Image (cartoon, rainbow, N blue to C red; front, side):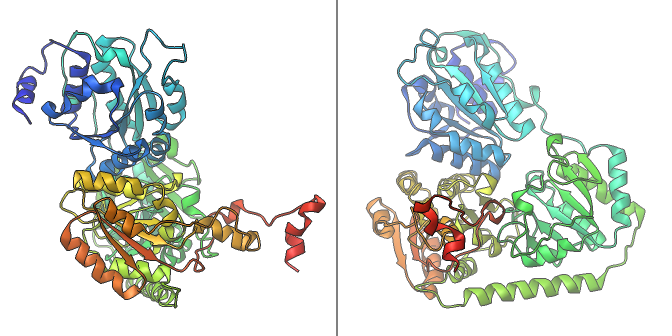
Length: 591
């Protein structure tokens, strides 16, 4: 904290004369904001001018969408709400995709949204857009500054809702309201928001304990809520007390330590067969900090694993998520850690020395060993030039245990779900159910800023890389030593798989012709490597980790070795009625 900030903190509860820009910046300081992401713009330049003196680092990106992904990941790793800002109009609208992704990921975020000046609103002036309307459906709230005296109050409201409802909030301020003077006091966060929530309804906790106590085959699903609440250790205690296997929710592979004897891995697309076969047997499911999303519980590998008759106990901080996708026996609205602590304490009191079910431990161990062996066997099949699974296997073997891994959406990125294992929380940063491409690399940059000393690796397909490679300039400029592992199969492979299975290998728009990504990286000042042999992956990764510089690994993988379609439930074999299209009909070409 700078000397100037120290002086302001001493008079926190006194009203002072200040400009609106000063009130905004000092509120950010009180909220412990260290970085703000965006692209410089005239609309907020008066505020921006204060950042260096306030001790706030402005991270200039090459595209505003990246700013949102960086802030999203920074928050997932650090727990501190990310803040982004852009020029009114196109700068802010460029953030729509990443804000929508953060909204579905339940990531607290504040979007500082300068809008057209009050004298010109409604004239369709230069760079004017109705930003509030655009963001209403992809944020938890849109907070409008209606007078310069309200700027600090409105910004506090934005942070309060972002943390309370776990998602982005738009702080919309007409650009002329950064100027002028006002009298206000700068409050500390504890004076206007409360971060802690209780364990939930005591009767519901008792009902949950009773179900668990009498369960024949209880299974736990641990989700991001358990991570955010620092409750994973309590989940472990419950699991050990019940000898209950623990699966993790879709793409939250860090929600339970993978090396624990009761860990069975992730459910959801390209998850763990061990988790799926285990969950299928459950008579009671304890879902902690997960909304049990529809996509995250769909059948996979032709295994319809989510139990139809099990009694579900769902713990979620948001009452809107309780029983939203699956009927529950007990719904508990509460903090994942506080609820888990209470469940564990009551379980201990219910029976002090539960008998360990050795056969269940042995069964879990067998299922995991079989699945691990299958993953290795699938990876060791020959590829031209590299089987993508082999590349994932070699990559994960080379990474240190504390590595943070971000993963994009797409064929190889999603196959990584089966190979990524973590023993620490806040290590897995995935695109999740919004499923937008171009997420992983800017997210990795944000994660690295949150933990500067941890290795950070992004897993990206070559299609998604085309949407994010411009941020290599940001990494070089800002000295962010992220490793981008680009799995290059020269295609939009997830969509190509649909064309293989449903459209008789008719490829429209799915083939990609790209430049040499390693050479492009070098031209931008980063390290660049082209890899065409699986045995080269491990040594290159270790070399780059030692150099601690931004790096791009252009890994050529086989474009014919593809994972199953993401959405079998949403695809059908083509039917054609017009004569000119009859040859495209499934009944015609299947002959």
